[in-house]
Image (cartoon, rainbow, N blue to C red; front, side, top):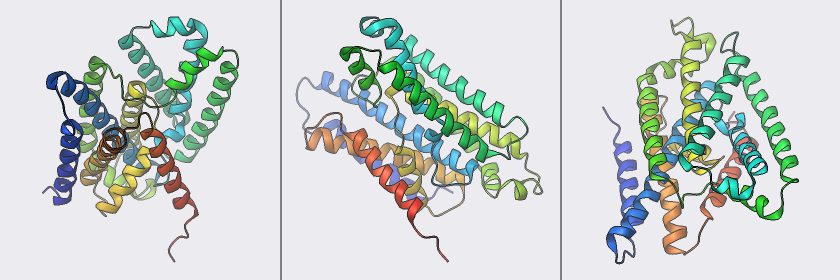
Length: 314
């Protein structure tokens, strides 16, 4: 039976989408609606992907303060952008086919993540802490290399890299968006299919194995889904580090349950609501541009500090 709170979250998302599409709508209606719908779809896809991936990653890591970004997805993405601009120049980078660039970036991110997972966890899925620490170190390395390469760029090329380093929903290609939507749908269905196994895996390896769960298999499937979701959304619009932490924390607060069949869709809906409602406020009501991701990162960072510094309950 579907929790009615999921219906409420779905209704909230529908209201936010309607406001985003129809607020202050003027002629030519078809053209304006087309532009708005593309941006709206990208907001929903990215928000749902990041929310779902974060719940999966936190379950496997047994820690609600972590996000997939800690493995270094954002750092690797910025490094890729920097090297493309450095090798091709600003004009060459701007002339890259959008679909090919999206495919190559997503493939590199997925391959890097799966390679990290398979190398670090080759002896079994019990050493998640080592995976997290390795991801942090590699992220620092990628940021350092990107910073070094950026010093070789001229100011105009550096501006291109800076612009590509922040998530942007203003010029999303529809073909890329369709591919990302298909990947998100398949990953979400796969995550829901293994939801009951994730419920057991959340108890920890020591408890899950005696209960008959193939823990390692479930962990590798979940990490593969995380890699696909985060890589696709990052290649589509750019990195958003703390959105998942917000979506996951709100999902656990709205649905205080251990059932992933409810937590996963809740996090997906909340992630989409955060982006759609936030973009509506900043773009439609305040008339601002390119500020949503900064606010999301700030709010997520504050939440992360709160989770780290709060005193545990006795």
